[in-house]
Amino acid sequence: MQVLSGLDASFLYLETTSQPLHVCALLTLDGSTIPGGYRFDDFVGNLDQRVRLIPEFRRKLHNSPLNLVHPVWVEDAGFDIGHHVHRVGLPSPRGRDELARLCARFAARPLDRRRPLWEICVIEGLPGDDAFAVLIKMHHAAVDGVGGASLIAYLAGVEPAALPPPPEPRESAPPPSHVDLLKASAADLLHRPGELVRLLPGLLGVGSRWLSSALHRRGMPMPFTAPRTSLNGTITGHRSVAFTSVDLDDVKQVKNAFGVTVNDVVLALCTGALRSFLEARGELPDDPLVVTVPVSVHDRSVRESGSNHVSAFFALLPTHLAEPVARVYAIAENNRLAKQHHFSIDADMLADWAEFAPARLLGLAMRAYSALRLADKHPVVHNLVISNVPGPPVPLYLLGARITGMYPLGPVFHGAGLNITVISSDGRVDVGLIGARELVPDLWSLADAVPDEMQQLLKATG
Image (tube, rainbow, N blue to C red; front, top):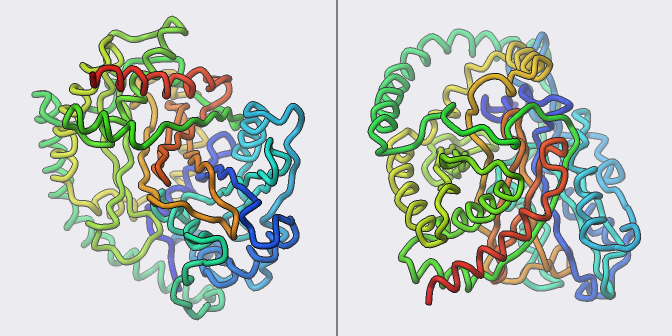
């Protein structure tokens, strides 16, 4: 019986119709590389054969009686690929605007919890011979950023006709009985007081160190200290999407010129773009923005269970600085301090405390938070989320079709209606932007500002 971890289950409890908590990826594809050419029925048939070898694509949720423990993953005995793959044609004039609107509509729809928590939308009719796209959607309870990239990798190979071996097969257990789940509930409840005693000193120590570092500006900024912008408010289920790319060699040139990291350059690109975007809207704040940066802890976690092995740190984006080079150096120094602060915290602390999340209470609290529009009233926790996911350095072929663009789209939250996710792949840095449509109805000006900022930084290298 595989019970969801507290962190995985939190993404279920915190989900509302206005805040679906899944992650998406738009992949643009060249179908001419598929042996025999692209045909929808063949593509779906190959996908069906592949996902049946990968347990994560066939498991679904099974709730416990009275929801006393988190749900468990069970095999979907009636798995049908037709429930998970949709086919649409890109409407005229078949440009990026039409593609982004299709993605926004697909990304806004919650997943059906009665089935495995993923869907694929195949989008045909892109400009160019044999060009098409797929939008993959997976629930955050099932994958984090790194896990999602790994699952996509099981569907892709480094050559058109070659696929990597699937994960090791595991026997699928039947749904547990109510008695088994009640026993698990009782054992969990008995275990919690001792676990609370074990975790509490660590939390108090982290809190005092965080407060001291923030007051002396030696670490992560404190939440609830971000300036308010139009990005920060209550959201609905409607979404807007945009995407762009820059050359990875250009990013490395800037990195080497200023002696910073690739992540520093990525944040600098986003900072410059956000500065231009907010300035054009007449709302550039005098203080830096506060951004949440998710961080994978797969390599530091001692937890063997759970799909999400992730933590996060708060970072400052110096949008108040006019000079691009000054922004790069400010980001590098802020990141250095924030990462030192973050790595002093146990990698599993967030996951450990998530085990105490009361399921029903958490869900009711989120619905009340949304209905009362509290995100419009309290101080801003953070302005947006920016995530940087490592990708493969070589060309990849999704079921034979070469991937020409890979644009990740993360979730957006009440109070922070913009998510920018970046992935490096095959010599490109692809950037996916998704926002709450009522807060940011058009993201193209922000997306287009990213390559513009890249050119400014390249000029600054001399």
